[in-house]
Length: 560
Ligand code: NOJ
Image 1 (cartoon, helix red, strand yellow):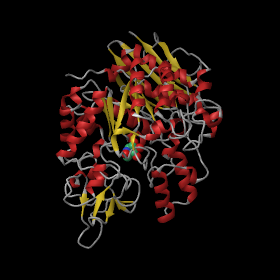
Image 2 (image 1 turned 180 degrees about the horizontal axis):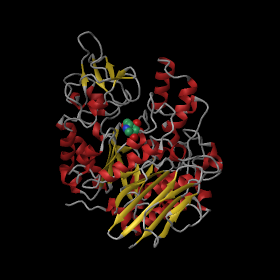
Image 3 (image 1 turned 135 degrees about the vertical axis):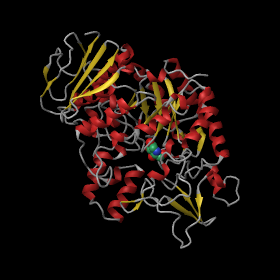
Image 4 (image 1 turned 90 degrees about the vertical axis):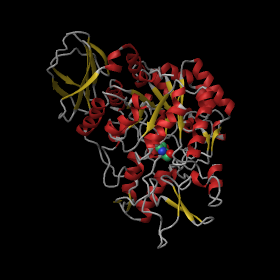
């Protein structure tokens, strides 16, 4: 069956269930909590809900370490709750996309429990085992993405297993056809239930370079990225998955693909190649890294953001499709990162950033809380953080290797740590932001008294209704979905300006990234245009215009 392309017209809303809404007071969000908010999501106008992992898990990495792919995590509810969520979503015309985490499992998955028993166990080759080198050292120099070596010793068989993430997330061996078939069977089981697609966790890591050679040394350990990302058989495995599973359903797929460039993204998403519909690229998330990666607190330069986003806009034209995102559960809040989270500019800069992204070509993703302008959090104490990546990195960079001071690392955590995205959704100004009646698993951001959904819903000028309008515009104007993209004023350091064109229609998007007025001179013939949306006083187009601080305007014109 040919896949239809409803996903090109859709807007996706990402839910991190642990932090979304708790229905039973145990401090952990759950499926019933999500059901209770479906009308809220419908009001926003999104089409698809992507649920971060809801499967059984010991929660070493909040559900990205799965111990049974066909059982719901106890804290989140039951399979009946899931069926109810699916049915209730479908009744409202909302589709459900599940997180598929199959580069690795939990070490508590029965496959791994078997695999570590003995070298001749039938499940041994479901994972990647190696002996130490002749001199007794580790199989290679790879460092885990969650700090420390990527190899863990297991005394039962006197060998090491590979884990790109935590030691409780052993990598699955996709070179084993039996493993692939088990995964495909599991995927069909979910699809037969009626789910509408998969977001595939680090899916471009599933094929490792043969021989597992050492990687180049970066910050003291071997960088495995070039040896595990986009590896030798990844396209074969995805094509097989597509032929055996995906192509039989009317679904959407999005691959999470770190270290992917435009050329490689084509290989994953070109329709004629029958792999995935779209991928998440990370280049715009890399523009504010420093010597210690994300932990170096560094502000981005607008020219870099323009260059990267424009490259993807113009690069994915001949084939493939873009995903558009500012936020997810691994990234800091965009207002704090690329806008301004002061009282004065929070909403305004949030609307400006939303305009920039939602007028681009691709499928937009909104991360929970983005639609009410949630911001980063700055807990004083390390003990208030929960994320394994933060805690491991602190231990490695501050305690063990003394590369960063406590203060430097806390600045990095405050600006880029993943828990910025994981504090509970702020529903109202009641205790715990209305997220739970109990004690939340991670503290709420103290700014919930000001920033919450109840307040946003009560104010027609709120950022919530601005997102609602942007989503509605996408559904009314084909040019937003199909128009060509052209960057204007590439060297301007304050304004991000671009144009979309489709037949005789034109769309002009102008965004001021500063807290100062900025004047723009344009050669465009847009005198007959209407102002489609803006986050300030309506102002007609003229060739020379001054944009107010953080102002965004979109002009639309049918014919010259
Ligand atoms: C990417 C996920 O988005 C992240 O949250 C997780 O820690 C890693 N993959 C490992 O599954």
